[in-house]
Image (cartoon, rainbow, N blue to C red; front, top):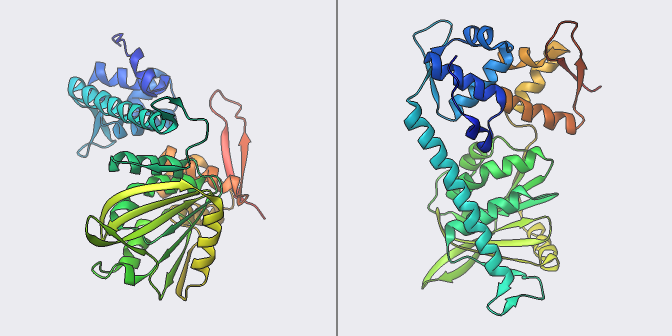
Length: 338
């Protein structure tokens, strides 16, 4: 195999197996899992997970005409350029965020003595990115009130990550807040199907009515850990402004106000997909290995690992690690906690 210098891939999160698998494809242009594992000396699962990772990075494609599946590298100059451009954009966004935080914490005469309790973003995109970061760092609870579909789509991955860490999710809404949006409840149920959440539909309007640029619009909220009150000004599906402040006392009062609303429908999403699928598969088999779960459910290694870690942390399943007599990774066997 040709010795390509791909050490720079480690800088953007590649591990040794993923890098060597990509080196193989650069040399051979294509290969099956068995061909790659025999050449590199890795296990089937290791190569399969590496190929899934490379496909997610858009460095290869799978030939549908071949059995077994043939993995074909894309043009490396184009694919790697795209990969690093995407990485650079993420770094650039992080730097902008850091700059915004510093601007908030400093005055033109130097660093503020007191913590800043109010934040407003003239750059709406930067504000929403900050909201995603706050959701990612939530520790206990996230409470939302009537948010536009477009914003929920944006923050759904962050809500999912919070959910898998055990953060409680709750949402209030009223159809009176979305008079021109059809099937709002069905759409948010479909959008939030990956998370465990309690949704309360009220008869009365939930949103505050505010004037923004001479237009009467709605204001919804995202409360995080009973500390941060974030306000989102929107008109139906368009987010217009974002601000927030640190004020635990106000949040407690506002939550009491929501509890006084008339609940006409309460929906509990207890265990969303694919958690239900994983639990059902383990219950059917009593005991099952990771590889068998992945094959039955057609879930990739990384996503399956997230679900299994969540169920283990919740005390719902147990993991038994069995060392094998032959060389190779230990087996991991899962069963339901009685």
